Length: 318
Image (cartoon, rainbow, N blue to C red):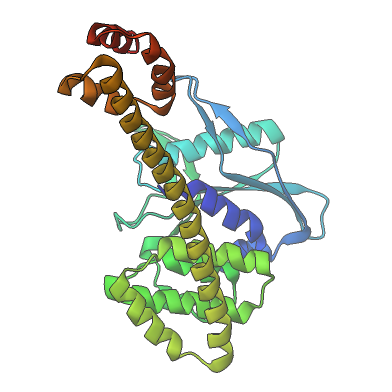
């Protein structure tokens, strides 16, 4: 299972200002970038159900040229929910009440379907009165064209193109463009790894798609191709390392099982010799024992005089 919340929170917290600049440039025009600070996890209790919920990401920023601050709340939503707008309002109300600061609410919808426009407001009204009209900004990735972002020199664009509106046949091309854009940014190793991992998670290609992906890489400019190949090579090395670890674990388990089978066969031979024979049913039970039970049986069988003694011992282990 993909941990969508963790992936998006890690991406957006690392590149928060770049995220705002990509989708809400008007906001970046009135903030003081050096003032960015993330608040500790904001946990809210649903009074009606008693369940606890937490806001994904809450940042505090100062207005440029002023001493006053405001909050930006970003909620990453991995599935469509009818009650989501009401939840966004509850988060807004509680953040506003707790901190006494204006709150700029943003929802990032990351699921593939449905593609219908998601609501961006929560309304409470009567026939004669609109009591509340709460609005929030939305980034609905499945309605965005990835081609509109391939020339945006922004690390968030390089990552989120992998979750935009993509036709199945375009997946190898999109993965190549994501990595090409990432190569042009010249980020440090840690941040490059973060974005490349995000891309590879959401554009995990099939064998046939990998062949098309390799052709697309071959069409890149030499410098871009070199950087992209370094990223792809790191994926391969990571996959090989994971494979080696899994192989060692399997080897350890297989070795233990071979040892258990060998021990059980030895115990069966000793029982046959001790008891002058052994029924098929009892032999089958002994062959299924764990290594610990086999070791214990190896000591106990010295006191056995008949199959009845073995049956009693086996029964005591059930």
